[in-house]
Image 1 (cartoon, rainbow, N blue to C red):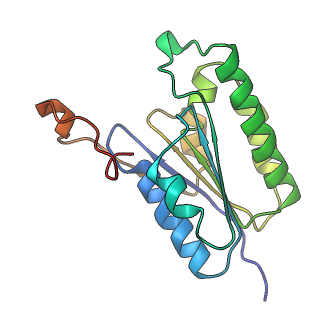
Image 2 (image 1 turned 90 degrees about the vertical axis):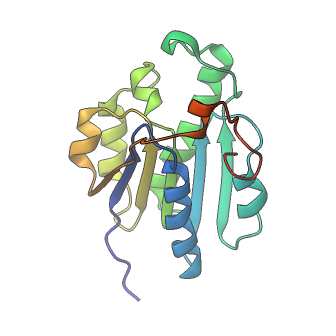
Length: 174
């Protein structure tokens, strides 16, 4: 069976549901026997996604980040180290074609925080194996990423429970 050309999908914006959208892509890929790598950046160590996807065949899920709030766009040394470990894993998967789908959750913050230039990223993206589909999520994304993505979905906040004082709930927001 011939592998189809991998595209770049982008889910971004200030609304809730970007990671959930990427997990929908993951579920579809798993259902068709695709091998998937999900890398979550700048997040804490536990989320419901980890508990769920570990049982799915062909899925590898890793988190890179301390979960600490990054003030003024200035990640500390540990956060930088965590990012570089995740970027190394992402870069290898893209260049070696070990997975059909690579999800980079919250990855675009790296561009704004000076952890990676868009040029460095785009060179790896352009050199990836042709069958590798890439999904990126993030609140804020650089214009260059909007231009190279094949699918762009902006998720906009209309109303959010936090505005009424309802805190994040286990099993629904994390």
